[in-house]
Structure formats: C-alpha cells, structure tokens
Image (cartoon, rainbow, N blue to C red; front, side, top):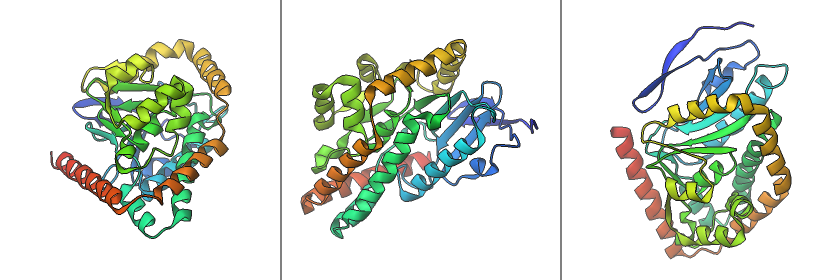
Length: 307
C-alpha cells in the first residue's frame, strides 16, 4: 500500500499538529478536494480529520450539504474492513469561534415566501439522511467525534447530537434559537434529545431559546469531554489515545445504545415534514426576526474572517 508523502498541516487556531494525509491507493482523491470541507487522514491512528470550511457564512447551505453527501459517499468507498483502516472520524470547524450556525435561514425565508413546501421538505430530508448515515457510522466499525471550539446553533447543534462523542472547548456555546422566530428545530433535536435526556428535558431545551455552555451540557451528559480553550485538537488526540485499546468495546457499546434508540430515518423525515408545515405558518414579523438573525450571523462571520 502506497504510503504517500507526509505534510505538516495546521489543523486549527494556534495549534499546529502533524497530520499525515496518506493517500492510499483506495482512498478516492476527491475526498481531499471538496470545496467546503477540509479532510486529512492521519495514518498512525487511522483517524480522518474533517473541518467545515465554507466560503461564506458557516451554515448548512445546499453547497455544504453537497459536500457532506460526497464526503460520506467517498468515506464509504475508501475505508472500512479490507480497505483503508478507519477507527475515528472527527468533524470540527476551521473557525475557532463558530462550529456551525445551523440551517440556511436565508434560503428558508425565500422558500417560505414562495410557499415552496416541496423544497423545504427536500432540504430537510437531505439533512436527515446525512444524520442517519452518521448515526450508523456509515456501517464502518469506527467512533465518530464532534469537536466544538465555538458556537453551535440550530442544525449545527443537531448535527453534533448524531456523533458518538462530543469534545468541546470550555468557551463553546450551544443553542436552538428556532423558537424565537416561531419555528422549532426540525432535523433531529427532538429525536436525539428525547432519547438522551427524556422528552420533558428535551422540550425544555428546545423551547427555552437559552444558550448553554459546554459545562452545562457536560453536566447533562451531552458533551462527553471538556477541553481548555484552544486545546480541542489535543483533547481529541488524547481521547483517541485513551480509547484505542478499548476501541472494539466502545464501538460495540455505541451500537447497542443506538439499537435501543430504535431511531429510523422515517421518524426523522416525518419530523422534518412537520417542521416544513410549521415554517409555512410563519408570519412576516417572524421572517423579519429570522432575517435579523441572518444579518447578525453574517456580521460575526465577517469579523472572524477579517481577524
């Protein structure tokens, strides 16, 4: 198997770590050429590091969804038993201040005003399919890790809930702001939080419009490991090192938990259809609140880019 060449790549913030993007013959080169996801394969630990790196506001735009779908297809093609080994899949963000703002609110406004339910449902179904495949770990015996170094809102928070483990720096924050403009999170929050925390606590979080710290979610059991600010990558590497000898047991335990969950794609899809119907009931004043949130997120993204 061709080991390729090693390169020193700064993975995040001020921390630089050596990641060996070893281009084995069976790893599709396209995996390392996605437009809005940076991907690096670390051979020694059989870890695939991936980072959200969109051109604009860090939200789940159709372009970013395209890349996530390709990312999953290419991982399935190149990794697994009798292919390139993959024991850990990590998703982070190139921005230390924002993991992801969640759904494409700008797109939602346009579709709501056009009364385009089909397009809203299609968007939601795409998100649900990505999450469901992540829950199954693409049928590869690996552990998935969400690494959070900044803000995770709405769909960004929901996406993290589909990972086996969440490692969060202490300054990271989480929230589901949809209720502030008359909507609810429609791509997994109810299904995941109800199973993890019970329906009463899930509902409290979903309708509260509160911002939660990494410590608060650690205390609830949603975040699994806390890291000091700027130390997220090292914390993930430490988790991988400590987990390696227990890998088979941890993979089996996570599979057992998901079996108990009995969470099917049809459930996720039905909830997102309810979300689309609710979205079409929003009033103009609700859409204006959504628009202000889009503008605020855009300004924050610009400040981050200029820093």
